[in-house]
Image (cartoon, rainbow, N blue to C red; front, side, top):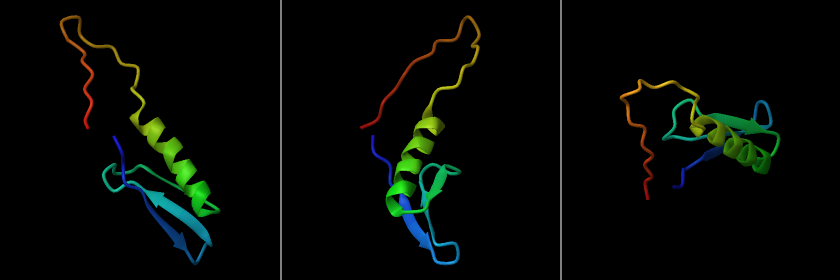
Length: 67
């Protein structure tokens, strides 16, 4: 699965922001465009990392993927 990342330079701070439109709240920044994109990859990986949760004994936990 691929995600779009919107990268913009903030002229006020002279830094780059990277935001995932389809993943609200998942964003990052960097001093260069390349750094912002790399930081965004790391942020997305952490955002999507499964959390450690306890589920009821009768619950089934399945994994799904999307094209």
